[in-house]
Image (cartoon, rainbow, N blue to C red):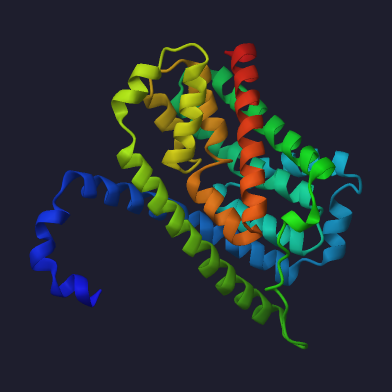
Length: 304
């Protein structure tokens, strides 16, 4: 900061460059729109850690993973929040004894099928209720399928355990809540910044002309917008309006943008890596991206 302040006279020309201004705008927008939901997620996670007994969570979900996963996926429909909030909440659920497969299904479904997101989708696509239905169906199917895949093929060593919640003997619930919130927010926010830097850099470097040329290629447009969703890292409450603005692309491709975005983007992968470890993050994001693209393609063919 001292060097920047001292050298601002010589940096003015660089700061006025259009590319740097665009980069700054994207980076600030990602962080500003994500931080409120990150605070919500860490508050919920800290509350789960400090106030909810593990026995309650064990009773709330079915014992068998084949039933617990869809139950957790449907539970995501009642929590308004974005992907930034779901990561710490899922971490808190796993720390309290919830099966990882169920917690991961919740992580994927909560930012994708909650009432705020579905309402925003209806507003962004007026007169097209099938877009809301297709988004709900494809997102829920993705969350449940990925949860079942983790239950079947996931290995415990891929998921770094959360040990930071250990509290001194005799510590009260308020102390446990405060310590969990402070640690989780600072930890997750750091990786949010890293993800925001990555997303802003890619956003500026990817040529818009290239996207326009690929819009009408059969089979390619879906993959193009799915990859664009990973790069842009738009909050799930706002991605429907971005998708609606991409009018050069067919509806199934725009559906893929809305299904993939809340589940796999650069800032989300960074946060998952910081919370659960890189061995988990790259495997989970790769499988989720593949399943989400397939689910969006099928829902678009069937409903759109």
